[in-house]
Image (tube, rainbow, N blue to C red; front, side, top):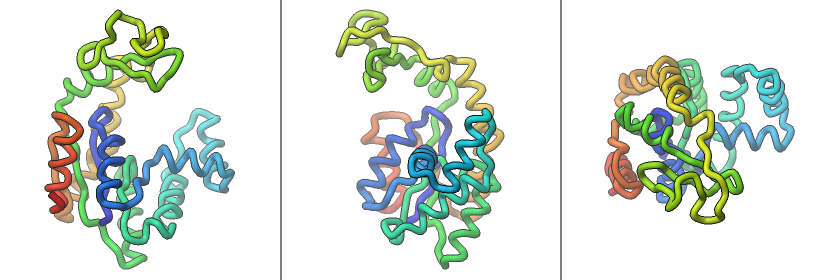
Length: 216
């Protein structure tokens, strides 16, 4: 299956992408992983991306598209893939359509993870990270530490990342609405979109996604 996973920041795309790709035995292709792999391997596209990033600029669509195209052409993706974070805008969606058409392929589904905006703000703004070990993550409401500001695991100081502050989250959501949300309508016109509530446990959301794919 060839699947695109869409949803706002804080919808749990990364978690669901990993679980679904495992259940479907297809590679999970995320934009973040593409960038890290190309930069660490010193590919031409990776070098270009790094130049823009060092200059504090957005990486142009053609660089991101090139990375995605290369990754989708690898042998493990021949039987399908799950895209997470790509396409991010209409230009990238149209480029993906063209890439698949060239290979005589098409998308099977676009899963749109839906979460109310205030829930997203609560999810992200409530997150607290341990300064000693960033894998130790708490939430002021959903998984609060026993002692406020102190990591239960190692005793390190818990803090709120700048990216997780409410004003930053709302800016990220505004960018999502402006740039990424239009791709949902693009794919809806192709009859590919299923909107899924991303509220509830990871297992519950995965169950809805699998059912939408006809794999329940």
